[in-house]
Amino acid sequence: MKITTKSCKIYANHLDYRLAWKKGQEKFMGKAFFTAFEFSNFDLQTNKMWIVKSYDELSKEELYSLLQLRVEVFVIEQDCPYQDVDGKDQKSIHVWTENEEGLPIAYLRIVEPGVSYAEPAIGRVVTKESHRKGGIGRKLMLEGIRVINAVYPGQLIRISAQEYLLNFYNELGFEQVGEGYLEDDIPHIEMIKKP
Image (cartoon, rainbow, N blue to C red; front, side, top):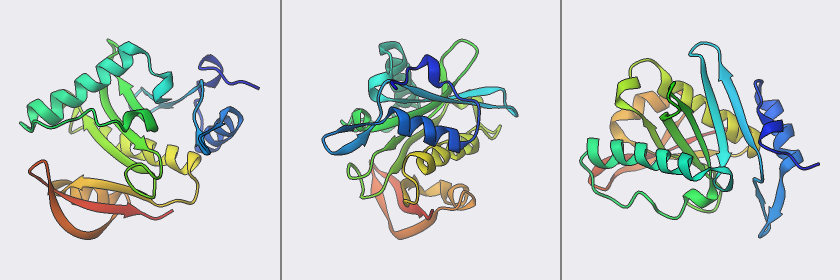
């Protein structure tokens, strides 16, 4: 059975994600790869819909607005000119929520195992400045973790975190591994979360 975007809007727990993913998965170059569907999860506390799509499922408008948010925060706000478009988006699952105008306000990507690290990795975690301090970043991370647990069950999750967010990620179950380092002149630390 081919799963379409319309048939896969899901408002339930991660077991439903897992079932829908297994039904929709295909083999592509020997790796499990998303095809023709999206997962969505409604958060009753924030009235926000979490949208989860593979790169191939993103519309041009969605991709443009996600990249625009990333540049707005990582390049302009943080005053850090760097190459954001790095060739990993095509091998990632994209998780975000939108405001009433349909523009993204919080986003992350899940890079498939073997691209950045041996494990699946969460990266490009971003919240629009106007929507910070309300707990949306935490909810975004919890959604990303939930998707990884459904798609890559039993695997470690790795992140490269900005150092000032160490306590935030600790509260989500991530532990520091190794020493800190500079990435684009910003102090970072590698962290993992055990299954």
